Length: 594
Image (cartoon, rainbow, N blue to C red; front, side):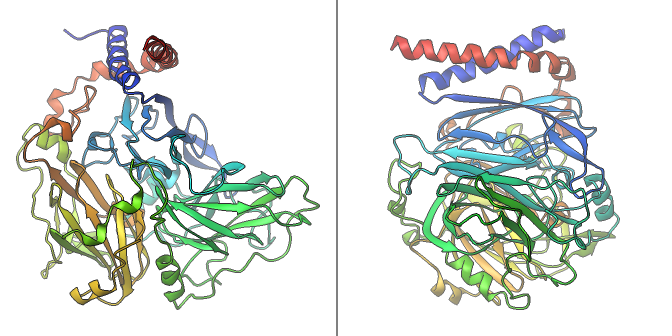
């Protein structure tokens, strides 16, 4: 007999209390968020359009937690289509169930809710979240995700006077459903309509290029202070050059790894990438200053309007910003400058991180490689009459039953463990083909970009080591150029057109993990796969059990009881605040009683 709505809500609440109380005993606090994901109307480029908001805000709120915190996010889907939230760069140690991509999760149906619960185990740094299905990221739904150091782990720089998040990204005035329809119809997206900074359009630095009435972002700072500025490219497919007029950007961290600190006047930030800069407000404030994010590797005369401009405002500023924008690198036809800049980003091996031991104690360069995969992409192709993208000749098809769920219930025929080590020589094909990763193996992946634009690649569940990149075709002799000491560890890396990037991955995180391009159009059309990593000993200590609130779909749809969730949505959301308060009190009492 089905439970009624109130009983279901109480049961769900008790389940979460039981799970979260464990964190009290483990000295790992929990942090809870409630996300209402809905449409609102906004006009970031002066044209009213439908955007995806979280709690009626665009962009969404920042998740701000500390290493080892347990994070609980109750997502209420108020859209008219299914939804998944993905936590980009959060490694989800032992729990790919919480990753929020179609290979591991059934999407949250419209008007339903689902609660994510995961621990940010042994991580620090700057990340972001976004909706991962149905091309929804092109309409928003994104926000920052900060993981602070625990107090006992020092940061490798003086404590900043403030923390600022800047979300940059290309933007279309068509919403995600219109863009999706174009892709489904075999058309390219074309040039974006602009670049947003924190969800807002450009400051009117030029009356010809920027119309009246555009709401722009202003960041107010105090003279003489140093701020940590976390910049994320949350866009669709455009690499952006980021710069602040007359200010140096001291790079300090990227995607969870502290870097060797060095100054840049500007830095190329590719789709899906995140960086932390230390910026000292050391100018005379004769006027405000421009903050700029402009498109890279394009015909600048055609792409001038694809430029985001915000304002850095000193509290003692004497006037508005005026005049031309600070120059971007002048290398439209020469990408060696950008690649050399990328090579200069190195790991700070002496800094303490989230791990108990110094980061430099992990000698990745001396570990024997167990698996090698060369993943090659190319411009879109036609497969079975459809415009598709592919990796190594395989255009990935998301199964109706998520891969991890199929494994759990031993559902056959959902996917094939036959992703090729080298690109296929025949015509490309559409398959649900997955990489068979070796648990505790050490995998070398060469990303070869045979397309005409920069591609960013991301791997869920891991920070990989970036050991090399160069133009031309990768060969085994290319290993002689690898950085085997202080290559940066991160989760998203660019591959320049006609070039390769090599990464090393220590496969110690059991689960099913997405390996994809971050360029949203290419991802949507099939440029991805998954890496399946199973502990042959089936030891529960290496993977969390399936969540009690798991959603079911595809071949397992019969296991889903709609009334167990849909009837509890309103009630569960209304009592979530009370639950947080109750759990906080219980944790405090447990702490006092020790």
